Length: 352
Image 1 (cartoon, rainbow, N blue to C red):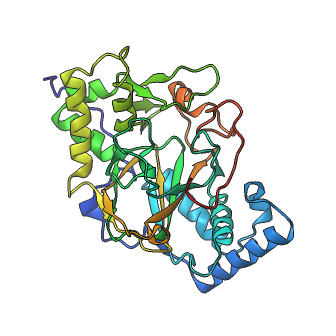
Image 2 (image 1 turned 45 degrees about the vertical axis):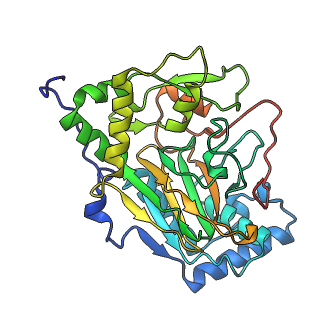
């Protein structure tokens, strides 16, 4: 094991443990009747103007008081603790198209929506549609299977609950900074392993000029900040390929320890989404996971979350290697998401 002579720890607002802040109130925001009225008026305005959902921009979606709250939340998510939760989104007071318009409108005050799959979906429906979780090419959000701690391919992710499951489906988040610091104290040799390349599969969603897999470290130290990019499912999918070398025992142990620390009761925060809850996470400083769940037989009653991937454009500077997954990474550019040849941005109203 490497010596502990040199330890590079990070101490900032994103360095938190669940046991310290799980019961805090400051990361909760409750939409008021005024906020909801503003959302409804803004939705009506986009309809009267004949805007498609994909064409909604912040200038077309005025939120005089809620917008102030969203700017505060943005700062907390991107430059503070790395997550926030909104409550009371009136999901039962809108039709499906209207609630998606409201959600997109809220989201564009936080960032610019990017595509979440090869179909160009700027709204992702997190719902079990019968996809086989054992098929490594399937995206886990289309199943009811457990999802390990991971980051998404965008600066910020937002999840809005339309319907909770019959049971299970617990959403969990952990601080990447706290995980890194714990590993640096106890197994710095494994931190070094996570700062070296792993091979990730693209699961068939291949940008123009790119290969079916790419190489990326899990931990990134860049310009005084710590970032991470991780999805074990995509690493495991790459291992299905004959030309991809097997993980070394130390590589496996490093990934396992990361996941073990993230799931520790003193590190994580667990949440059971209720209808109208919206969770926001900064993918560069937090990882999130989901337990498996039991759903209702009636497809219309099944657990249903709507997801946004948001490019913050003027958020953190990203390491050059992020271009392999994010495409453009320069400040001011739309970045992140899944971009493949011939793709057009779409906004489905139901899971598909």
